[in-house]
Image (tube, rainbow, N blue to C red):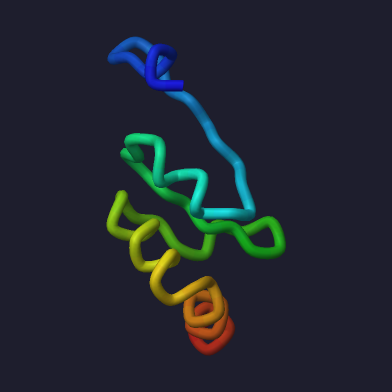
Length: 65
């Protein structure tokens, strides 16, 4: 994947498993639920999801949304 990610283009990875992102350099992360982007961030968001899961993000969105 890294050879395709250059200054001239980008790669979009859609996954239900954040662990796949351990092997990739991540610039931006978008969390989708029910067809809506509910959280955006950088590589730190992947680390947070790996440590805490998605439940807190979904709960926060339901509480605010």
